[in-house]
Amino acid sequence: MAKKQGGSGRQQQRDPQNVGNEPKPPKPVNVLNTKKGDESRLILDFNEHQEIITHLFILKTAQMKKYMGWKSDWEADIKADPQYMQAFDHQHSYRTMNSDGEFLDSAHPVGGHFHQCKIKVDEKTGKPALDENGHLQIEVSEAMTIAKGKPAAYPYDHHTHEAYYVRSNRIKVQQIAPEVIQRIGQLQSTYGLGIAPGVKIVG
Image (cartoon, rainbow, N blue to C red; front, side, top):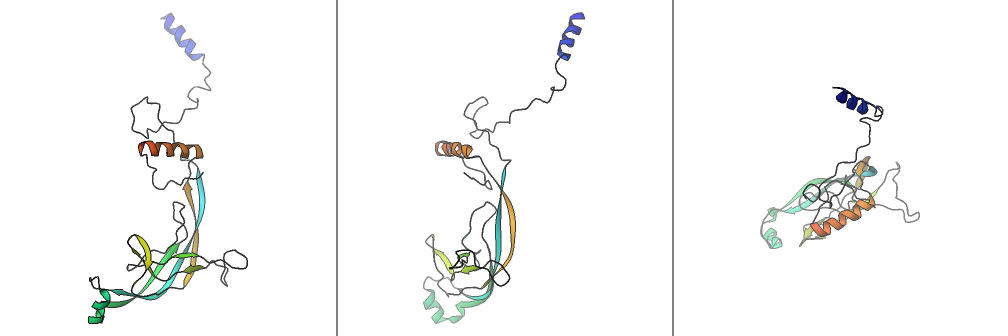
C-alpha cells in the first residue's frame, strides 16, 4: 500500500497548471487514403480566409427570338412556317465574381444564349466608369451561344441589353498556404489528388 501511495505522490508532483493544457498537434488528414503510420500524409489548414467583393447587375428586359422547331436547316423551316420563330421578353443577371473568387465574364444563360459582360472603363482615366449615381457600369455583348464547345454568335438575332447596378457583396473564401499548394500540386500530379470545391487557392 505504501508503494502505491508513493507512486501516486510522485504523479501528483507534476505541475498541475500544465496538466491537460499541453498544445496538441493538429490531426493529420489522410489525403491519400494510406494506412495509419504512413509518412506520406499531409496536414491541411483551412482556418484562414480572404475577403472578396462581387458586384451584381441586372440586364434589363429585351426581346429575343428563338427557333421552336428541331430541324438543322432552321432557316428553311421558318420560311415554310414563320410560327416556328417566336419572340420572348427576358432578362439576365450578371455577377463579376463567384463565391470561389473566380472572375466571371458572362451573364447567366436564358433561352439558349448568354451575353459576355465586363466592367466599363473610362478611356481617359483607365478607371471604372461610373453613372450619374456613382455606380459601376458594364458593357454587354450581343447574344451568343455555344457551338462545338466554343462561344459563337447567337443565330436567331443580335439583341443586346442595357444593364443597371444592383448591389455589391463581401464574401469570404478559404485560403491555403503557398507551401501547401506546392505540395498539393505534387500529390495531384502523382496520385490524382483533387482539391475540395469551394476552397480558394492563393499563392
